Amino acid sequence: MLWAIIPVKPLRESKSRLSGVLSPDERAELTRFVLQRTLRILRQVEAVDQIMVVSRDPGLLKMARQTGAMTLVEGSRPGLNVALTRAAYVAAAQRATSLLILPSDLPLLTVADVQMMLTGANPANGLRPGNGYYQEHTNGHPHLNGYHNGHSPKGNGIIRPSFSGQSNGNQATNGQQQTAAATMTICPDHHEDGTNALYIRPATGFTFHYGVGSFHKHLQEAARLGMFYRIIHAPGIKFDLDTESDWQTYQTVFYREKATQPS
Image (cartoon, rainbow, N blue to C red; front, side, top):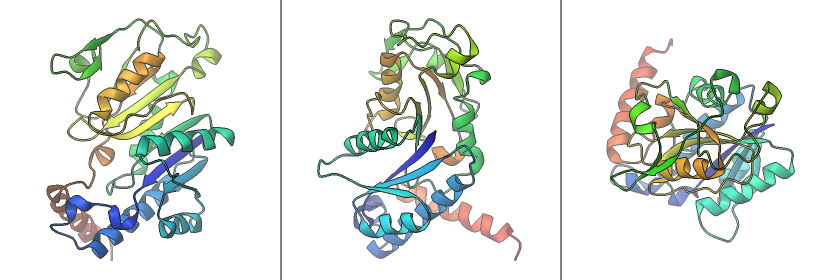
């Protein structure tokens, strides 16, 4: 069972880096709009069995429930990683076997982008057991052997076997075992520093590392756990609304698409 989890900051705290171009009310409305859009996209993906919104904002949680999503009030301990760990255990307690974690600030997200994340995790599409090893990259960022030589910036992703010393019993000898293998698909931001989408199976046992350098840290975590993994380059996921430059780009794309829609 697949659960999609969307963490959302309180409206008055969201998009603070856009304060030079948007008022607090405008930033709050933008957050609501993009969250509603993300929920609509996820409801169109048949593989998603349940959606959970995690936030400290009562208004956002109420809105999410009105769309049919489950909600979880963020606990008293601060931090996105703590909130997601708690959400993962809540989902697993209700029979979730895998998670798709998406932020609420992906205004160009499409159904096809979500399906790329899920299709990439399918063992039938090339996930295989194999030997690999973890290295330290020369710039200080951890990565898995072969990633920097092999990943494609054009959106096809790449599959690499993970750390050979941690199999967790998942090295498959038949299709049934392979389906149950621990798996991660990940899509970075356009800087390839942060994590803009993360799919994991199983739902628990993975340590989240959201924050600076989270993309590389999540690859390291996959290596630590012996997970099969795939890097996805989905354009609608890689673009997020973070800076004033992002806002200008989004406006251009948004109004261009709006102008081409039939009236």
